[in-house]
Amino acid sequence: MRYATAQAPAITQAISLDNPLAMDTVIAQLADKRVVFIGETHDRYDHHLNQLEIIRELHKVHPDLAIGVEYFPQQFQPQVDDYIAGRITEDQFLRAVDYYRIWGYDYRLYAPIFRYAREQQMVVRALNVPDSIVSAVSKVGIQGLSEQQRASLPREIEPAGEDYKERLRSAFEEHQSAQRDAFDHFVEAQLVWDESMASSAAQYLTANPGRQMVILAGAGHIAFGSGIPSRLERRVHASYAIVLNSGVAIEPHIADYILLSTYQSLPPAGVLGVSLEENAGECHIRSVVPAGAAEKAGLKSGDVIVDIDGQPVTAAGDVRLALWKKQPGDRVVVRIRRGRRSSTKQTRSFAVDLAVPPKTPAQNDQKP
Image (cartoon, rainbow, N blue to C red):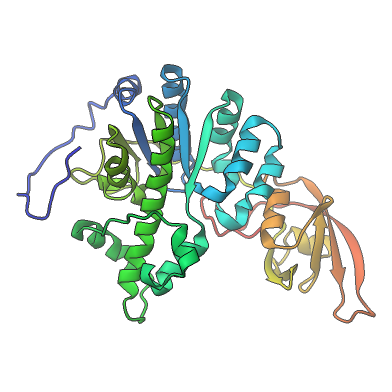
């Protein structure tokens, strides 16, 4: 794929939406590529269903197809392997990879993909770098990292091109910082993400010649090929195609294919109707939604959640883990500790009938 440069003359093109390609035609063309990148908006359920359809169809052509994912740092590869091999359950998997702290999006968005990979015993590679490294680069830049931190990154990190920087600037401006060199560090953090995922995928492809890989990541890491794709191609010279989903601004050279799908929402999840805060290894109820499930059951602000249906709770992610498969109307038993002074602390259990979220399912900040 060729990408336009800032000096290239502007060319106006038209796309006929009345003559779309059939998916079987797209799949046939993708099957010839060593790597297929499929971008997503993380909270779009239809995007993940599209990813699954492509994976299913390519898997018919390439039974040894591998999947690379942005969602987990490389350190969790053993836990991913354990889940795919059937050695641990889905809940054990989510706890083992610390899913709701590391990634955080509603796991129901991704469950069909991981369940299919498990059923078919497909290789799934965790491609990402730890968030702590990205956060450190955002603050001090790559040069400011310790020797130990720098050792976890690829040796070669190619500088960002001007078009890449320009696309990142709008995202940066949403989180403006007065800190000197803040934008440069923001760009370097993106480079760390992209180079690390490209390097991890390249290691797998080099060790497994002839195998095809589908890489799932946010559209921003894939669009125009200037994130992960070009950095992977630099390492392994593999043929690739970029597939993006609806919701992106259609521009020349942004992708090889754009899938236009109708927005689909997950069904409402069952929620307690509380906001939470973590303190000293405990999960406290900061507030309860008026007339919500928790308040109706008798839970109060200040209560410390000890466990839910017997599952220990020490952080907000543990609450989400206990509830992720629950629906409105399902009943859970929440054990709490109440009382500020040690002499008055009481442990009590409450049966809570979960409610519909106060916000729409498409919003990721809904309360647990």
